[in-house]
Image 1 (cartoon, rainbow, N blue to C red):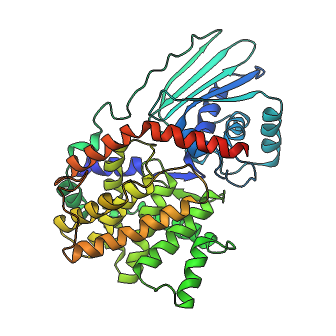
Image 2: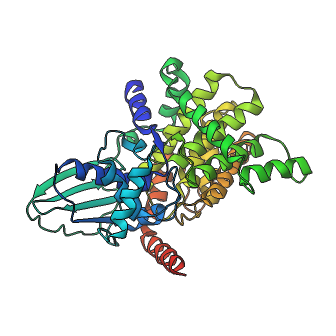
Length: 424
């Protein structure tokens, strides 16, 4: 069990620079470019699911002022190498940016959105005089399922697919298993998580320099006496400042959780903020972060990589709450009641795309994660028979996953509103 959960933890906590949705598109187009040598690019057609469109269209790209999927797709082609993975867009030089902008200006890049797919979906079609290259990415940002090359490839016929078509590896575990792992794993095996702590703090420090930034505003409210300086606000300051800087396009890396940098910041910085106030040891903090990450991955295995629900709330916030409860000395029951308090209160939080405003949802989720844990310590929790709740972890997130599936049309409505606003 320990070896497998550690492998899951390491595979789900990877470093990325910038929002992972535009990076995923650039990564896929870079792979397509790798398949041709000396062939002139005639056309680049990228087909994506609506949730990815929603998250990638208006978020900042690291180190540049340009935003949007066309420039992200073009940058992948210009860079032409996928070896950096989710750090592909970390250092964009002037020549690469000029060349990418020219591709967009020349009308070579086309982006299409498909409504029939409820899973993360990227289909890159790169055309030259000699070849048609097709790269297909599904479910996860770097999960390349096929690379095809030919003179003329037949089109893919998409049908509606739920994200939850097969059981994820982590789903065979229960909360007791995850807690046992966090308590007993050799802490030396968790040392890699320190990089996530350091990167998150560095990003938060940058966010706190932003004029009219969320983290800075909360600090000012504490100074003015309208907010208290406690573990709730400390977590919110760190999370909000870091997420706002990242969404604005600050070219610093962060450690992701379950494919999302904002999930990672919610998990890591919430725990860091609470540990700071509790004066916890590094050992305790790393174990709490490990538990938080595994719970987050567990939730995402049911709700999908992208959905109409804000994953910072219903996944990373839930995971963060579990870690906080652990640091407070919570037992399995109290940790589960923390999770119940989170799901039973903010499960309706919508995802309306990646942008600086995500920082407010991250801060909300972070603060309520801490409060949910504190309430659980006092024996205060929502009845597990209420609403969509359940008395066990699997049942709870099967219910949440079912709700996520049924919100497919909600996601379409959000996308249409975003498209309409972009034209105003």
